[in-house]
Image (cartoon, rainbow, N blue to C red):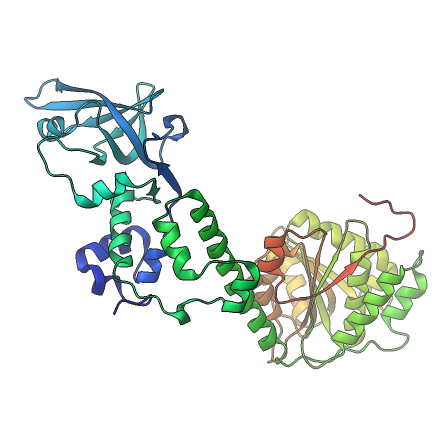
Length: 470
């Protein structure tokens, strides 16, 4: 019995399996059947040759317009020059070996699939020694699979490589599908969800994507297969969220009359009700013995930075360090200057004449080098730096925190989930820091699913006084 996990070697033999492995890295039946067509050629509808790009491996459905055998200068051999057309434009085919054999097969008026790397010669697009299959072959019996392929209303065209043209992939997939036995447990989406959302089964989707009779079937298959990807990803993220909730963390409770209280007392404006409420939520969550994983979303100008900074100060008050990860050096520099300005003398601890009741803020980016970088790294490692703002440089080897309490990530959709996790592991010991992610609204649906699926979400709806919606 052939299943999704069956090795291609066991199904197709070593030679064919090696071709697919070398070209695409495929090892199992599931690998191969998830190699979906990139487009479909309609029966009798030739490929628009205008769309071909120099350098790409293309498969075109075209009609042979002319064939000419030309002597090669200084040699006893000939080359074959073939022109194929889509009815409006043409592309040249060139054969430098076995010209006579190809001439017998390539008859004007016959249609075929031609595959090769698109090149340019004297201003014209050209395929050199393309592989091809024809709707008819002079004096030869046509492969039944080819007859069936051209008889279909839709001909699947697969992503190809130099050694594996589209139709070879098509034949391999057909061969595998004829032996594959899909079981109920192969369908990752529960039946009740399929029925609720009007999705076709996984089995129907696989056969419809590879052997469709109509474009509607292709559309339904794509809907189902795209849903599978999102569903599996969401399941993984929810499992990660459940696992993360069991990890240990240090409860961080802000002390009375600490930096946070001093900062609040000197603010030149009033916090909005939303900023206050979300602030209280964050204080509560970082004062728990399992790590917070929270997403804070809000429009530009909604005051996310103030909310995040107050949470960072609460963590510093509790004896920990905080890190703010930004996607670019420009944004990291902006955050660094903004926080220093907001904190005022509360950011001067350790400086001559500085406020020793405050904290120290450091900036670490790729541009910080030499002795300055060494000093910053030392201040992070020994705990002198309570707030560290940086870019990907924070994730690099050699950056160690004494006690990382809270990680704040700005513009998370520019980072992978793994990058966030890498920074969260920068603190020694087995306890994880709390994590706060900031992003602007609205969040694209795909981004929300792929990046934020393991986070609890809260939103800043109200703009601070004097701010206008953007």
